[in-house]
Image (cartoon, rainbow, N blue to C red; front, side):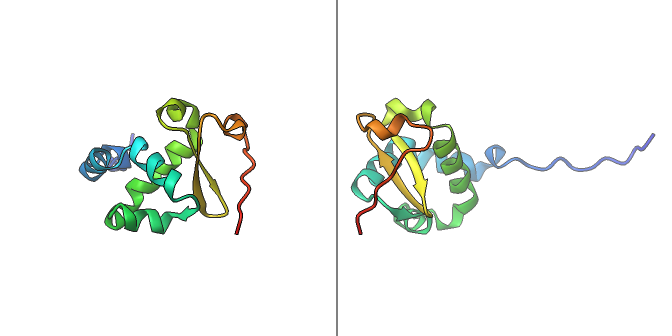
Length: 107
């Protein structure tokens, strides 16, 4: 029997930094921000929310919001990512409920 123990790897959601980010950055705030700033990059969002020092926490949040969108849908829409840019689709948008929504970007 091996008595040597390996330290348990800390999960990002168990950190004080993550808890602090959750107090400042909510789904509703980000959804409202993206509705007025469609197509922002992740770095733009970090800068605008002044969270550049909390990149890992924010990456985890965005991963949850983008991949588990149905949980947050009624809280302001759906956050989607296309070509390294983020968009917020209104619940009234017919594309918002599709598994892979079609995002048309006018440049």
